[in-house]
Image 1 (spheres, one colour):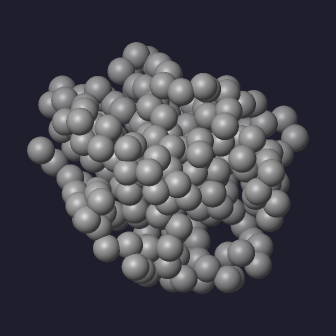
Image 2 (tube, rainbow, N blue to C red):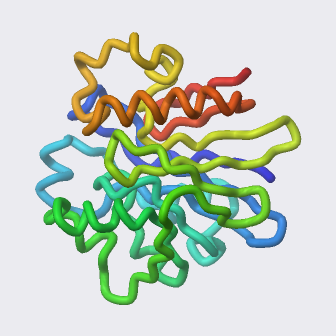
Image 3 (cartoon, rainbow, N blue to C red):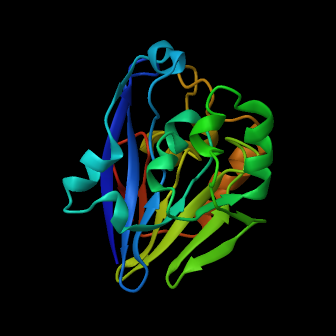
Length: 218
């Protein structure tokens, strides 16, 4: 299986971080998309100084179109991870039940981006197999229902970490990371730390980040 990074946006209001989605090119299921970037447009986009781009354009760079995406996995439902879900309304959205419950209560501005009429949710309660060689693991802390994706590759497990760690440096340093300029890295510090230590304990071959172009390899 091949993992392809999509460049979807840049958030000027948070350290100019990039926003990435990922496509897992699955041999039998087709394209599995992890996170969909930022939606169009709201005051929130202006507030966070987002430089945005369409998911379809990012997919086209890899000879893919939205129609090729058969499954969408949202790591969580913050605005920069579910904003273009409606582009893929033909696909089911795999999300933790706790995360959808949280987002329906809290994400009043962007609820239209993920909770649109006809959205088909596959609700998960913890770790779950999505397809052969692709599974999600619950990694709460950034949000109560955050999840990360594990992909089996010939070289070992690859982690699509979502926002369990914004950057490769935070991932490496965990409890010793300087988060002074990273507001929002966690809602629950203890749960966040436990989730990161759990991912480290899996000894992944590589870790891919939504907001960092570096890939951590072991």
